[in-house]
Amino acid sequence: MLNEAAAADLARRSDGTRWTNEQLLFHMMFGYLVVLRLLVLVRLIGRLPAPPAGPGPGC
Image (cartoon, rainbow, N blue to C red):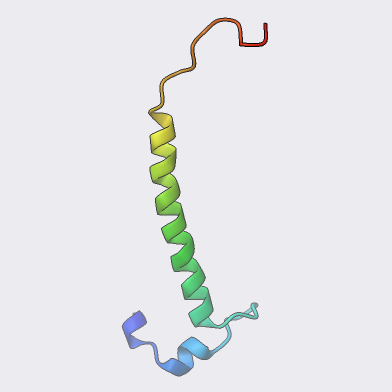
């Protein structure tokens, strides 16, 4: 579908926004790539061991 879009279609402003369709596509793709990287980080943090039990260092 994107392959069929003409330059005029991408330069046209989207309904209800001040951004062009090309700008919206860029931000959607950028957000998607950020979320992919954050998912890797969340999975990594989820594998960390639990903190040791007992009183904290200031007790």
